[in-house]
Length: 82
Image 1 (cartoon, rainbow, N blue to C red):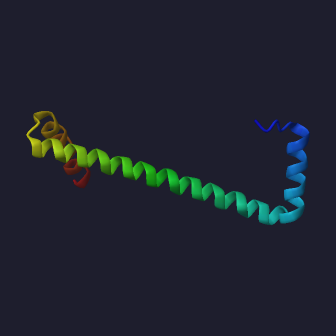
Image 2 (tube, one colour):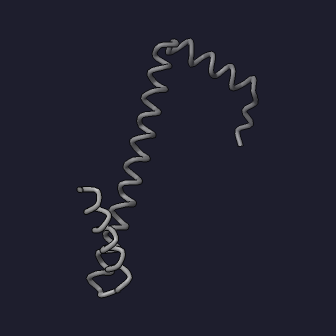
Image 3 (tube, rainbow, N blue to C red):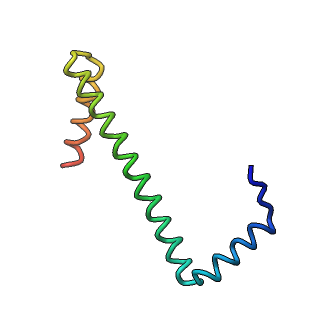
């Protein structure tokens, strides 16, 4: 789409390095990595909560398979607390 080659990317990297400096560029990279890690954690936590809500809805509706899953989850939780 943009057609960036190796030379263009090296020029952009050199300009960014001149503007921010090596120390600040390192901090920016670390902050970006932490932000991505936090985003992934939040998304996975949301997925787990959605799965728990779906299982609870199946139990309320009377679906037997969800009750089995809930029983297995309870058994696992009891084992972890011992």
